Amino acid sequence: MKFEDRKDAGIRLAEALEKFKSEEPVVFALSKGGVVLGAEIASKLGAPLDMIFVKKIGHPENSEFTICAMADDGPPVCTPDEIQKVSSKWLDKEIDRGRREIRKRREKYFGEMTSHDVEGKTVIIVDDGIATGLSVRAGILEMKERKPKKLVVAIPVVPSPTSEILKAMVDELVSLMIDPHYLGTVGLYYHRFDQVEDENVVTLLRSASKK
Image 1: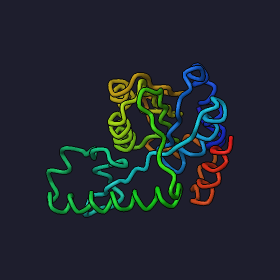
Image 2: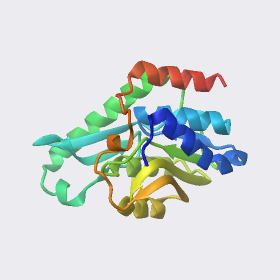
Image 3: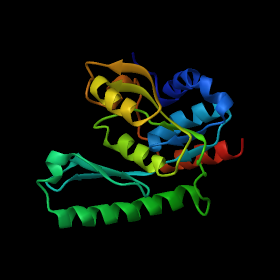
Image 4: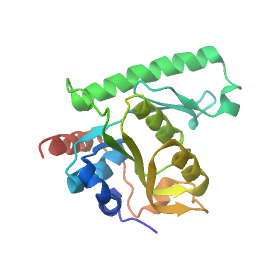
């Protein structure tokens, strides 16, 4: 299965999530790319659109190799074998730096607006794909601390091993494809997978808030 672009993936995923419309859910996009999908889902379900801000921490010798991820105020999720190989002092500094960056990004996108209160509500976390799975797991832990009634993760395509981890963490995983032979890169499942600019994210969030 291949998607034309993120909008196409969002439209298809929204159809699979329509069963939650009566629960008046809140949709949380997990990344800038996730906002494109989240906007389609929020529109289909008549739901508000918010974001979970995620910061990845790369290995000190290879920043592209993610060893931890954190979301807003939730606890970081790390690869145990890898963090044993790095300085705990270095890691603490990176976590502090990540928290500051998250606060700046939230202010940039939302200004003075606060995140939606989700206690006792159905929450749908959406992203455009999964690489290591650390980011979505960090997002789940962040959201669990806010005490939703039901927690759903919606992603177009998920590697089989990661799907089992996510199913154990949430009430329901909704995916259009659970791939036992994952291609390794999210973009390979899209015909067009361009970078999403900050301006596009702000426009989508503001548009959703007016509906």
